[in-house]
Image 1 (cartoon, rainbow over the protein chains, first blue to last red):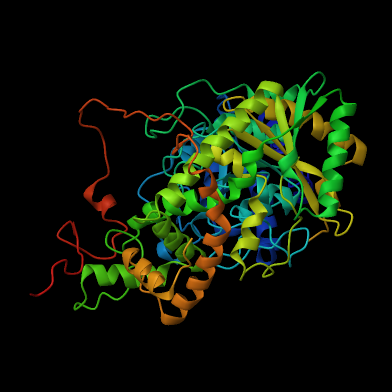
Image 2 (cartoon, each protein chain N blue to C red):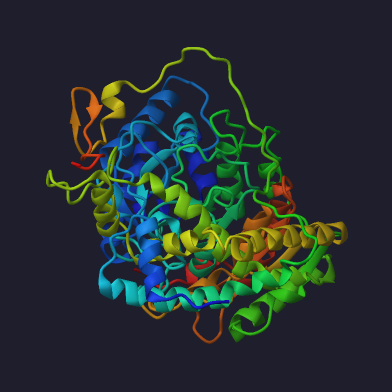
Length: 499
Length: 98
């Protein structure tokens, strides 16, 4: 099998071929490393490629197989890891100068689970600094290009992870989603991304941005691959006080038994209106028609508080970030600037933070400091938390009437790099449809639903499920994916231009 | 709602330990003002009888048994320190000279 054939395989296919001996894990890893070598200079999906480490992991899988030991469901499958998870054998920079070259002394729980499952970690992917952004332009190490059009953004903050999938540099990737950073890049790159229920995947060793919203999750090219990865990384972790101590929903089984027939699917009035690109709306409307054809009952829903979600998010997330990022003080780890022997610790901290943080991080730290300050707390942060209650109630009411909710994932397709760089509010609109789910803590998926006719760029369909009902995303997602692929005659990504 | 002045931004930067340059203060003052103006709508619900939600999960304090367990070695804990001395983090002076 040639390298160009191997890199197009799904994770499920790779795992099966390694288990049967048709391919070795080393062959698979080498094919992906060669692809990275060939195209990543253009895409810039990776911040760090661990060539030797990946090959050593692959050799270990092959030896395990030769010894006749049982292999995990993703043994030997290569994966691209967002650079927000601590790894004791690779740098963890979180896309920031603040942690340039930092090698953490411990692995995140999610990383330990990947290693235990014999997944081959290829390296760390590019991201908006501290996961703050919707375009991967805020990385201190330069932007990532969208494999569909390298002059456009791959979504953010996990643009590197989704671009690695769309450019066939890896069949699986890990992202984190605070306001849409798994789903939004998935939508604009024509891939699949899942934000599991808040607390379903351990946050231990995931560098915190906004602790009540951040959630790690799977990125893949197919719904089944996402489910296989979901089952590997989910589950209770005693090291994380926000980890849910309950069984992981049967997501792989759900992905293998895609079904829409008889399901009630909600369409929310508030997820359309101004700011939505015509081609995005067109593809979404077609998706709703498809769901009807597949036997779903469509229910119109009114969730009035969703109109305030973006505002609440841009008070809550910066407030939590201003607190979480206080740890970057130049004293115990990371960058230290201005320590010339005469300055106080306080001055050195201020100079270090000025030098180490980029604009978006500074903007959010100050926004959060303002929202939490005496005199403004009730009007801003306190009110935002009330909106959060209202949004959660809207979801509760909605899920009394429907099994899942669908919407466009993003209001527009991928925009050109630089287009919104000086307009934070315009940038924030990219997460309009994804944010309500983060505020309420429920689960959501984005999967491709076609190309927008006006620019031939991918459009994402978002599916939202109640908390701990993540399997519903996969049941519906797999059915929709199968119907679309049958209609198109091939997976959407095959229409992407070759790099 | 009041607009955000240049002086307020400079004050916020001091509170947040960010040594901003003058031009950054100007830049952020105008941007923060725009953002706050756009998100201030949340206060429209402030008078309603709505309890705040700080977290999607009901969090309870989890205590573990007070047992000695494996942990980082001093070398591991200090491995990312910008400066260290005698197995300690070496930091700039905390107290002023007077």
